Structure formats: C-alpha cells, structure tokens
Image (cartoon, rainbow, N blue to C red; front, side, top):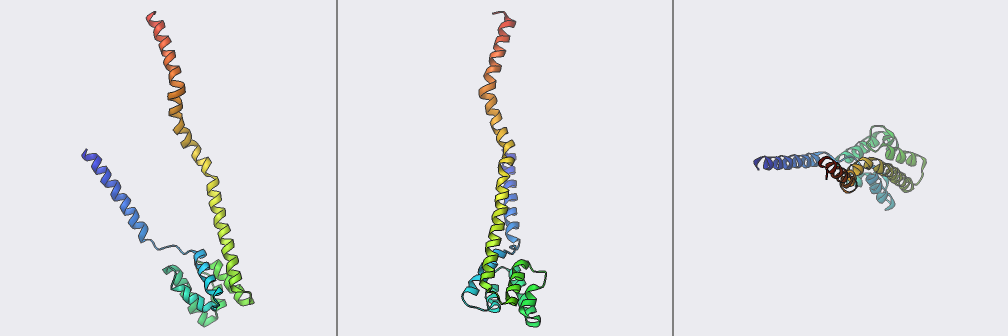
Length: 172
C-alpha cells in the first residue's frame, strides 16, 4: 500500500514538473499570427512602420525582439533593407514585406497571400501526419484484438481438444 502511494506521488510530481517546465519555455514565434496582426494594421490604413510598432506590443517577446531589430535597423538603412536582412524568426514574412515595400505592391495583399500560403503549408503538414495514423495504429489495434480473439474463438477449440485428449487418456 505504501509502495502504491509512493508511485502515485512520484507520478504526480513528475507530471507537475513537466507542466511547470512547459510553461517556463518561451513561446515560439508564430509567423501566421504575426502576419494576421500585420494585415489588420495594414488594412486599417496604417503605414508599415506604424503597423510594426503597434504589432510589437501585442506579440510575444521573441517576435517583439525581431520587430524591434527591424525597426532599429530601418532607421539606419531603410525599412525595406532592414526587412530583407537575414536572422529573423519570421524571415519569409519579412522578406515578402520587403519585396512588396520596395516594388510598391499592396502590402495588405502580400500579407494576405502569405497567410493563405502558410495556412496551406500547415494544413499539408497536419494531413501528412494524419495519413500515417492508420499505419501507426495497426500493431496496437492488432495487439488489442488478439487476446479477445484468442478467448472467444481459439480457447473453446483448445478446451474441446483438451477434453477429448483427457477422455482418451482416462478411457471414458
């Protein structure tokens, strides 16, 4: 009884520390969420710089740091050049914004296109993972059905065979 209580306590503690560690990790930058926030600002008629400044306050620390770096570099080299510089967590989005900004293409349309492409990419990843589920479940399902199959179909046959063997040995 004491052993069972210790095992339950250890499992609970391990689960709790896993949850605490999980909460301590900084959130990974999400380019799709960042793009949606940028699209909101751009469709409201804000300039790209004002939109980035507004979005910086609404995102996590990693995204905010990347946006701060772009805005600081943009004061020196220009916003388009700062967006094109490598090393950002959302470099695809920033490169797209830089190209649209340099060519004069509508920024909101470019960001909307990025959102559609990123959503399609994520959907493709999820579908690919979903396609492997039946393959990965084959063995667990088979192992789950096997004991029941043995008990229902094979065990009565084995019992009949053993009964016949016992009757032959005892001579009845």
